[in-house]
Amino acid sequence: MLIGIDASRTAKQLKTGTETYSSELIKALAKIDRRNYYILYSPKPLTNKLPDLPPNFQTKILPFGKLWTQIRLSWEFLLAKKPDVFFVPAHTLPLISPPKSVVTIHDLGFKHFPELYSATDLNYQSWALSHSLKHAAHIIAISQFTKKDICQYFAIDPAKISVIYEGYDEKIFRPVKVKKNRSKPYILFIGRLEEKKNIVGMLRAYAILRKEKAIQHQFILAGSPGYGYEKIESELAKLPEEIKKDIILPGYVSQEEYVDLLKNADILFFCTFFEGFGLPPLEAMATGIPVVAANRTAIPEICSKAALLVDPTQPLAMAAALSRVINNLGLRRALISKGLARAALFSWRKTAEQT
Figure 1 (cartoon, helix red, strand yellow):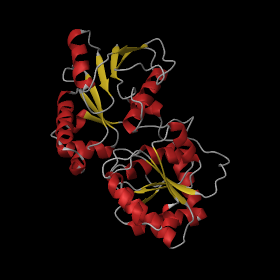
Figure 2 (cartoon, rainbow, N blue to C red):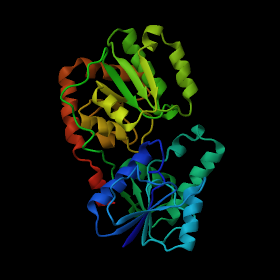
Figure 3 (cartoon, helix red, strand yellow):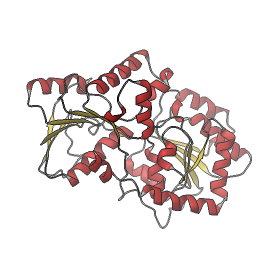
Figure 4 (spheres, helix red, strand yellow):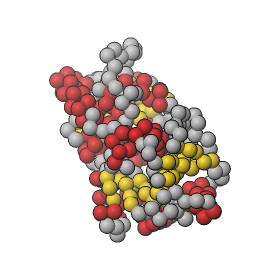
């Protein structure tokens, strides 16, 4: 059987959750499936992104500008041989696609936070998702939460949607015996610095603990600025200098830098407003780092009882949760143990086998 995959997300220079999903799933499929043949459609070469692919995997480079998936892939399927099955790892089917097309839906953030999108983006997101749900033969949701969301907002048969969880790289995300020496311990957040990630709320929780002198930790927020970043800057400007100097904003970090930051962190602080899955908590649990996270959207489903979950709208509650994990050694050890056991239930191999 010939399977086509839209690998445009894998070709992107900067990786976020959907790019990681696309890359890691293709790598896992290449390890477990030597029977079927694969064509990876991409606007750019994938040699640096996906080295050492087996002979049954080939890349077809289709240069084009914007709307590559919708227009260039449609053109390809109109003029060239169609694959028996076509898979899109992120949301959007081409205008013209093979009858047996499968698409992964990661989240419906634009439905929950329409104010964070321009009118053009909002209309496009709504159209693209409606088009994909209508024309896909089957749909993959990355969590039960996302499946429920799809069924709530769109008239679709739940039987058409399979829930297949994401995974993590077991070779990279694993505990270290000795952490690097640092002048100060730190709390880590990783993700886009935008409004729906609740950065302002987490900053307020951190500031509460520092003002009470309950902790001396730094707070590292690694990620690119996103929508609403000016509100984050405004919140930072209000803080006393002795607190502000311990809030580190390194910007976007590479995977190597992220792994290093995670392995040497005291806590992953991930009290976001909205997640379709939430890879950082899973990766932190696999690394033996305790997690304080939000008690809403997909996070409780992924973390279960292996993280300390708290209301992300309550800075005092978030501050109390951080303090408990930092100052209660028994709780900290329990979260680490439960986190390692929980993370062991997930892998990219499982994702590939179920896909």
